[in-house]
Image (cartoon, rainbow, N blue to C red; front, side):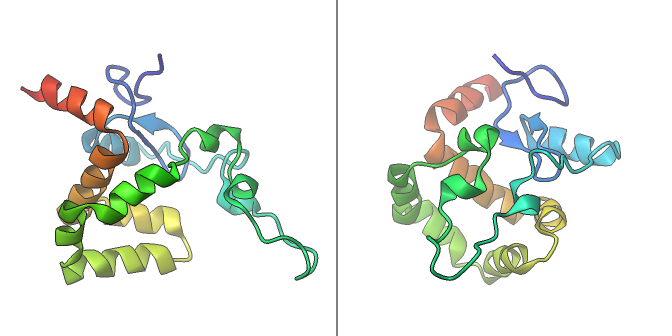
Length: 149
């Protein structure tokens, strides 16, 4: 079983978008970012090596084209994506214009790693991310909630 790359105590639930280290909590993420050791992993960063179609007649990219073997384990199933779309809790969070603006700024940012790092400093964005994880990985988040008690 893999442990958090920062505290080495918990099972990691997240992955740094820059260097791909796995971490277990927002606190570990902040600690990781604060120690200045976070450097892009050029081998594993799929965004930096996107395949380029030779002609428009070529097949469009698929998720499999963009994800390396390590990233495949982070892929979310269609069933779980539908859970996200049907979630009333997420819908109620998305009513907030500040959250929508944060998401649009991450999506449109040229440096998505930095934009995500900045967004994760916002409690509202962290709440949104946590709610998404509760829907996608309910077993792991329920176990973590038990640990908090």
